[in-house]
Amino acid sequence: MTTFGAQTTTDDILEGRDLRGKVALVTGGASGIGEETARALAARGARVIVPVRDAEKGAAALARLRAAVPEVDIDMMPCDLASLASVRAFAAAVLAKYDRLHLLINNAGVMASPLSRTDDGFEMQLGVCHIAHFLLTKLLTPALIAGAPARIVNLSSRGHQRGGVDFDDPHFLARPYEKWLAYGQAKTANILFSVELEHRLGPQGVHAYAVHPGVISTNLGRHLTVQDREELAANMRARGVTKVDFKTIAQGAATTVFAAVDDSLAGKGGVYLEDCHVASINDDPVNAASGVRSYALDAAAARRLWDATEAWIAAGGPGDAVAAHA
Image 1 (tube, rainbow, N blue to C red):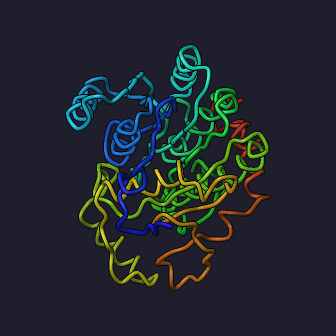
Image 2: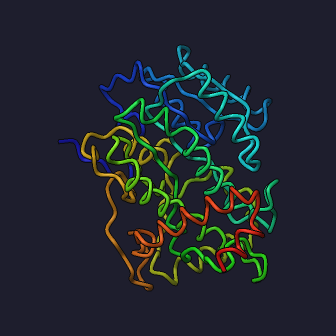
């Protein structure tokens, strides 16, 4: 059996695999590890759907993908994850073209951004990282069931260790905004979403996984100042991370691809992966170099988040839903 780890690349994971006939959707697939994920899957024969907010950037990404793999089968379609109306329109367009979906990779995200809100009024990090992907996944569920065995991969982060979901004020309507706390909340939400997805869809052959890609230099960090990076390094040292090993983009996307295709994970969803393996629970506040917090795998919290997210979406924004769940 091949042993994979932190230095494994997407091509290592996919060596010898034939993905012809498979349909995959990768959000954030026009840059960074999302683009590498799309490239790697398409290079093995999968048709890959990539939602793009910026048509010009999407065209540039498509040109890069075709330069790398001339025969790639990429279907770029417009979508803005900061708008639930756009997510609904995109999902409808996907379902009109595809009756089944084998892989849904919820890769797009926002990290440590200044306080801003989506078109629907949600705090931006929670809105894009979790709520938009929640709605997209629910809308595409019929195609995933039709494509079963199918997998959903939700991009999380070691940043989930910053804290859980604050159900009293998840959208920072009353409490002071702190960007890293908001990021940690969003990344915990990605894991909890995977737990509840597994509970609901696993029996129908659709399994869900949360992954930490590692530390990679991509445009995800575009909001970080020099001071932010210094504070982040200091925080990591305080939690026992004395050395940060940066990954290449191909290494950073490897855990996503591992979650998407590896046979050892068949029927074993609702877990959090890092460095191409299922992570152990780690609640040690001093040593946070690896592992997943137990609160991120809590089934009751996962159910509560699911219900709250449905309420936010039904309300068309955070205000009424927060009041209803206070």
